[in-house]
Amino acid sequence: MSGYWTGILTILAINIIMAYAIFLPVATGQLNLGGAGFQALGAYTAAYLSANYGLTVWTTIPASILVGGAVGVAIALPLLRTKGVYLVLATFALAEVIGGAILNTEALGGAMGMSVPDYVDYPVPMWSALIVTLLCFYLMTTRFGLAMRAAHDDDVVTDLLGVSVRGVRVSAFAIGAALAGLAGALYAHSYSFVESQSFNATLSIYVLLYVLLGGTQTPLGPLVGAVFFTLLPEVLRSVLPEFKGWIATAFGESGSISPPDESWRFVILGVLTVLMMMFRPEGLITRTMVARVHSRFARRRRLVREVTA
Amino acid sequence: MLLLQQLSNGVMLGSVYVTVAVAFTLTIGVLNFLNFTIPTLFMLSGMAAWALTKWGLPFGLSAPLPWPVALLIAIVVTIAASLLVERFTFRYMKTKYGDATEHAIPLVSSLGFLLITENMIRIGYGTDPQRMAAVSWDTTIDLGGILLRVPQLTSLVVAFVIVAGLNWVLKQSRVGRGLRAIAENPDAANILGVDSKRLVPVIFMLTGLLCGLAGILFALNYGEVSPGMGEEIGSKAIAGMVIGGLGSIWGAVLGGLLIGIAEMLTIHFFGADTVQVVVWGLLLLALFVRPQGLLGHHSIGKGKL
Image (cartoon, rainbow over all chains, first blue to last red; front, top):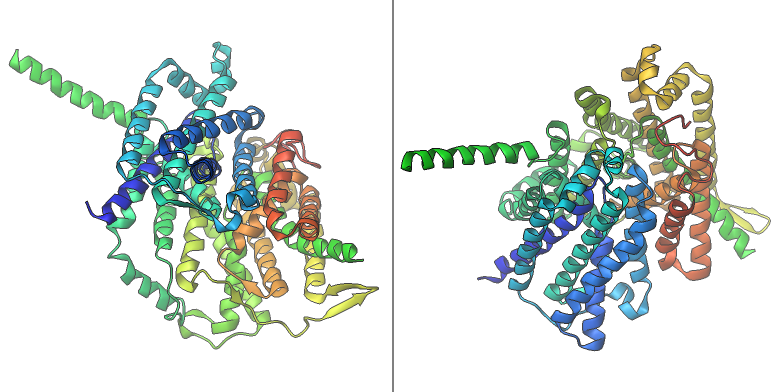
């Protein structure tokens, strides 16, 4: 496989894991706008252990997951007393603090970033993404998954029925944080370099948006969202430069400025977000949609069985 | 003396944060909507003022404009953009989904607008900061050893005039009473004859006006605009708003000034790199210890102005 495609597969895998990391708290009714912070934690844990102690991937990745999860629990306990807008702001602030702290820590390379000696090729992120996906699908079928859904739909009633809403929310947040740590570790080892600037607010927004656009009711949603928004820019790669020239002339004499191509991905994401929130605010994949598709297949299977019997 | 100078610089810088923080607190106080397009509106205004003074109107309609004209057009553009946001986020959600709308839906939609506008500007003008020509009255006053730049002083005065005016409007005028009624209880306000369909756009016009002014004052003060300036100022304004208390106008003023001073003192004692940690650390601390903020009320979404 060419380097181009292995690069895309790596990003895809990391994005899928990040999507599930944000999906788990969102599925219990908490918007987490701090994904980049937890990813940075994982990435820097892996980078630090790998660069300073020469540990291999098989040690650094579990360490990153542990650090992500531990910080997740430590933060979730006081943080999840807040709700709604406050929680959004608090997670956002947390990511900024983590980013800023890394930027000011000499041992972590500060603004220069850190290089990571141990390299992993694309199969490792791909397999990790597959395992995470299966794990999340399984998790949502368990009693815990049911409690998560219940906490999302009505926390008061759920509490009255004897489910510890707070426990469920803290656990979901912490598992999400651990997954973000995993995504960070895979990022560090795949790119062999980490710098705190790459874990910025835009990343947090981006990940949250494709989870919400994919749909938060089923574990299928984040998968669809992550795959769609990772592959879309690649599909549009040849169409966009023409469009870019057109916009550039419309805004005045600016032919000399060469605009960054990354921007298009965000414009498209933004337009889709606004449209989705207008026409389908519960996301692309909903529970009713899955149920309908499922029942259609079930009926076909039943028909086949009756005909063959 | 140097410390006093830094304090005054902090207050001047804080005045820009105050203006943006008041815009945030107004939408959150009345509509329970965290409007993430506010940083973009701020940036849009600054970039529009820069583009108009450098190139004039788009499509070659005019020569480069003098800055007072550019300033007016930029504010109009910002207000128009803000109304556009209202049309596609808030009004749409309300008419289609009624009060069952979670606050999350317009919030996410405004994040979408943030991405669109900021990246359109990046595509149009590139990512690099652009120099804004200095105005002729950009001089310095020496006040007993403390140096004050005239544009900074102007922005401080403008910020306070605007906030005082806004406060008067909210407390005294008919529109203001209507807005406070919506903040208290949207349904009851509607039953009692407050036309919320016509009042909600007023909030967005005020948002546009505040962001437009702040963006231009920032551009004149620091002589530099960039597509990323909204994120930086907006995030500090959010921090100021939360520290002051969500939905409280004087809270936003206090919080904005505190953040400005904290930023300058941090730079003075620890260097520019630690600003982010201090500002956001303050915000996180405020959320842990006193989520309602210094001047805010306990409940959000009910009776806040």
